[in-house]
Figure 1 (tube, helix red, strand yellow):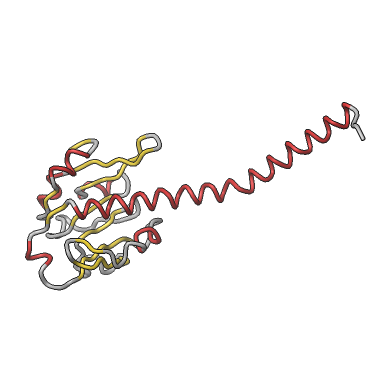
Figure 2: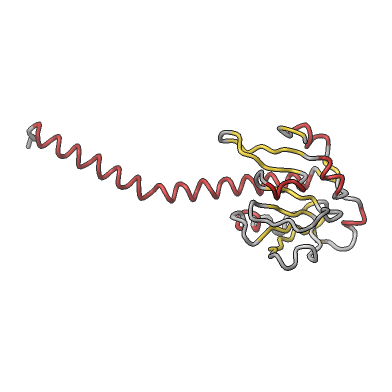
Length: 181
């Protein structure tokens, strides 16, 4: 059976509309997958930041736990939670979720700051590496700030902030930074 040109056009238009509808349904899933990918990249970068940062012995000697803290509002909870149990500086990484009522009392070694993080501290806590997941007012106290450049995730280093927190960023890390404040 052969279709006349007019019927072929209907089938073609029907096929294109069906394809467009399917793509619209898949788009939220693709956006979610993209967000997960970005969160996984951020978690991997932060893990490696910790590997190339030095803490004075007094901040790491008390127990066998290395505590990474992030705000409960973070979109990256799942990605950072996947790091739990890995080893940093010979210690087992533990992930702690912060709410506004107790972030200084958890004795974090590495603290994630996102756009919703309210920084009520006038000075950063000693022995804490602060990493901001994006630029903004809350990122001012961060030693490292993740930024998007096109489709890439890069970072800005702030050695002055690291010094205030009594941690030291390695020269390798500073060499990789897109910019140093």
